[in-house]
Amino acid sequence: MAQPQQLPIPDAPAARHLGDLERSHARWSVYLETRTVGTLAQGRLHFLEGARHKSTGWIFREWTEQEIVQRFNDFGPIELWKILESLS
Image (cartoon, rainbow, N blue to C red):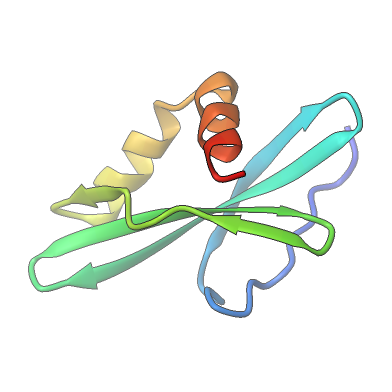
């Protein structure tokens, strides 16, 4: 497996690289960005492949950032591919 690209995302510099999705010749790096709004933590996903960048809305809402990371970890590659494909 090749080294993951850990590039900064201009509109989300604090987003964390959490893994890669690979299928055929496509390889997307997956990042999770979180923020706190009031008493809730929110999160969204960023997918990078070379110069291509796709992002979700703020689809995660939990009490803490740690809970968002735990929810993300419940997603498997199939669910992440479905999210990515829905952004096309």
